[in-house]
Image (cartoon, rainbow, N blue to C red; front, side, top):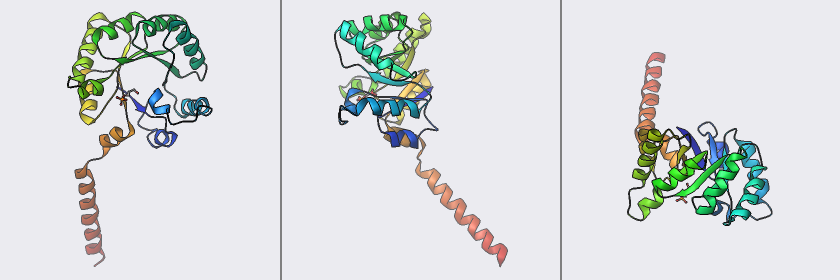
Length: 217
Ligand code: G3P
């Protein structure tokens, strides 16, 4: 399962560079960045990882989205153009995919949106697990259904679990066979920190120190 970091923070990308295969961004993550500095930041992000960097269009209409998507694709050769699972977004996906541009269909909340994204040649589909949980639905069941449908249908589109809120989402995504997951830095940190690991290390050091003292005595 590919692991992407859901951030625009270069320090966080550098900190976790050994664990991640790429980066995903979205307009909300970029909201606080001066508009004149966004393209430069995105270029730095693209150069900071060898894997895909998802960058989302803002436009909503077909023609505007198509122009913007082609422009975004020029930022770097590892850009994956993020498009919403809307009527126009799916149609633009079909067009950009036919031009060899990598696409990530985002804001996916149903298996049929995922199926249409695959039909339109999407590279990735991003089912938003956390936001479904937020409204009392079972976000991971959407992921599981999508993985199963893609397996049965032989879809090449990769399931990229998004809107991840906790370690359980990571575990369930891995168990159900998702191809990729994008995690906020805080969730990635929860994936390797465990109090018993820290406690066990302290005990090893204490016992080793005691042994060394006995040896010297
Ligand atoms: O960036 C895509 C997705 O992971 C964001 O989800 O719900 O945390 O804003 P959310």
